[in-house]
Amino acid sequence: MARPKGSKNKKTELSVADQIAALEAEIEALQEQVAAKRAQIRSLRAAQREEEKKRIFEAIEKSGKNAEEILALLEMD
Image 1: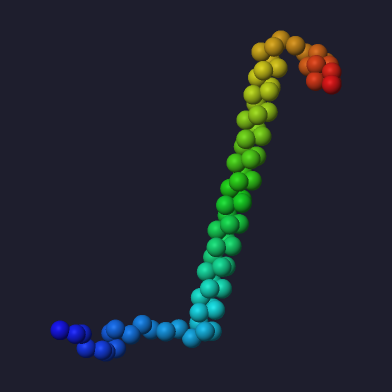
Image 2: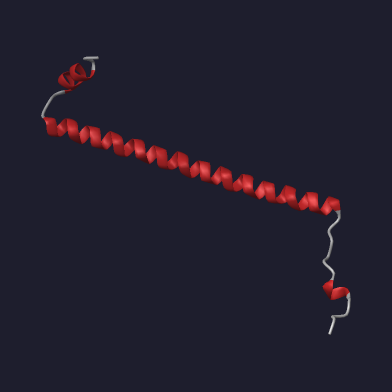
């Protein structure tokens, strides 16, 4: 048996202006998410640099060499 056509089978259609507004709101939300992700990346890169500095400092201490010796080694290029 065929279903009767009625209002519950119709999709509510948004006006073009409403569709534009919805898309603009979605874009704004996505831009905020992108900004938050970029901030996370900056924070993680800063933490990564700090870890690298710590590893270098520990390697220098472990080597037993003084600052002048380390700088001389680095300036050999």
